[in-house]
Length: 299
Image 1 (cartoon, rainbow, N blue to C red):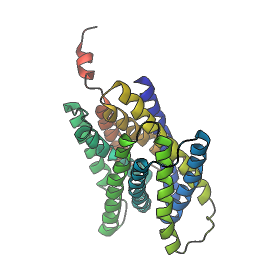
Image 2 (image 1 turned 90 degrees about the vertical axis):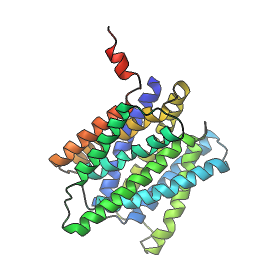
Image 3 (image 1 turned 180 degrees about the horizontal axis):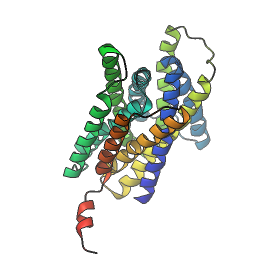
Image 4 (image 1 turned 30 degrees about the horizontal axis):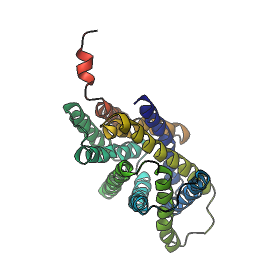
C-alpha cells in the first residue's frame, strides 16, 4: 500500500509541471491545435522508443480501443483547457480541472464497488464548493467572457475525468502500450485541425520545448498513476478512492505554486480559499474507511 501511495504522490508532482506547460502555452498565445499536435508528437516518439526498448507487443486491440477513447477525450480536454486558460489564471483553471477526480471516483464506486462513506460524501461536497468559490467571480469583462470561460473549463472538467477513469481498465503489463496508443491516436486526431488552420509546419519559438516538457510530464504521470492503481489494487479493493484523490489532489497546490513562481502569476485571495477548500475535500476523499475508527481507539 505504501509503495502505491508513494507512486501516486510522485505522479501528482509530475502532473504539477504539466499544468505549468499548459499555462505557458495559453499565456504565450500558442494556437491550441498547434500546441496539442507538437506535444502529442513528442510524446508519441518518446513512448514508442520506450515500448521498442522494452520489447512489448505492438498490437492489442482491446488496449488500442481504450487508448483511442482516451485520446478523443484528452484532445477535447486540451482544447477546452487552453481556451479557458486565456480567460483566467492557473489557480482557477488548474484547480477546477483536477476536481475532475469526482468522475473517476464515481466510476470506481459505481462500477468497481469501491466504498462511499459519509466522510467521502463531505469531501465531494467540499470539492464542489471549491469549484463554485473559484468560479464565482470571473476576471473577464462582461457576461460573454464569463460564460465562455465557464463553458470551456466545465468541458475540460468532465473530459479529463473520462481519461482518468480509463486507467482502471488498463490490463496488467500494458500501461506502456496504452500510453503509446493514446499518444499516437491523439496526435493523428490533432493533425487535421492543425493543417486546417494553415499553421506553419515548423513550430514557433519555444513551442517545441514546451510541448516536449508537457509530453514528458504527462507520459510519466500517466504511467505512475496506472502503476499506483495496480499496486494498491493488489492489497486493497479501494484502489480508485485511494489513488485518484492523491494524483488529482496534491497536484493542485503544486501546479498553482509552480505556476505562480515560474510564470509570475499572482493568486487572488478568493482563489487561495478555493484551493484550500478543494484540498480539504480531496483529503477527506482519500482517507481510508477505518480512519476515524482507528483514531478513536485508545492508545
